[in-house]
Length: 383
Ligand code: NAI
Ligand code: MG
Image 1: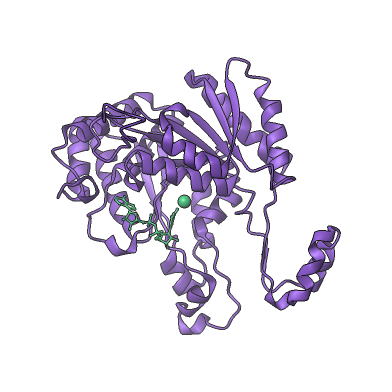
Image 2: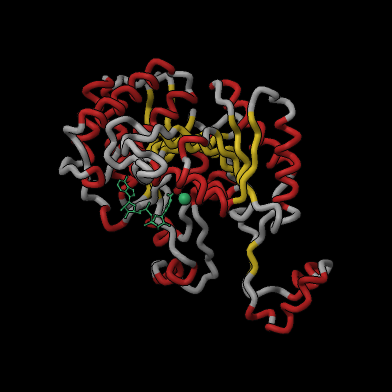
């Protein structure tokens, strides 16, 4: 029997391309695992009215962890339009299967490292004022994004039911919305808990401590989002007290988008609520070469699902053209989580080497190589 059982979830579009690349590298590295193919994504929404079928949830329960490619998500109206005729008009509601998976398995911590590898022509170089040499700027950031609550908690209404309106009128600021007609009002909530905030802050500080990082920055907006942002900020300060050697500072989400762009090398560990973490991690990804370089781990207490942060990029689907490096760095994160330290080190070194040598590159890096060519080159050095 294999040492590990991995739920294999390519999903949609380029999710399939990059997962094929991952498999090639895993096999070359003789990773001792059996792979359980699991249905997830748009096809299953259209055919079955459920992008995350129950059989997939069951299958996941019997595995060590999951590897996930990407899914396609579309707004509600379009989603309903694409259902097979037998399922139309049955009141089915689309939800993102990866968001649901994070909530169902309580994968509370989304970790997203963004690191500039030397020789990557896409890495941020700054301006001639901030970086007169024009050389590379060393960026090494890790975003800890709360993964189950906040703006992506899924508690939404449209139109706004009268009972919800009445309940919200406990806050007098709600009253004027009635004049607009509740049928014209849409509501998405941002619900955070002490538990959720405490956990994500602790994860960020613990990681900083374990890896010898000296700075943890909270990304929030407590001057406007007074209750949710306020709670997160108070908890962040409380948790920070347990880590006296680490500089704990705070930035507003809007301000950090500017500071990060000006001085990305100054940041190390970043911690944020679900949506802010999602936004800022794409910014971080942009600084180190784009979505082709951004891996992530969704981690709970005993289970984890690993995925590149990019989506299904439908225009490139099946062309084996996109960069597999985000996916392969994701595999490296899986090795870390499994404590397969030697494999993690070998894979990252092979990725860094192939980036630096610059001989085999996908289109985003200015090359002409395919997804699988890059995977083969990395496998050659990692295997
Ligand atoms: P996307 O990440 O799929 O692609 C945006 C663009 O980024 C692509 O057109 C391509 O130019 C570039 N890109 C992405 N991955 C790349 C790679 N590995 N190598 C080189 N270039 C790469 O985002 P988009 O277009 O906003 O969304 C497409 C679909 O993906 C939507 O249905 C969206 O809902 C879904 N999505 C799914 C996610 C997930 O599965 N976790 C995350 C983000 C979007
Ligand atoms: Mg995102």
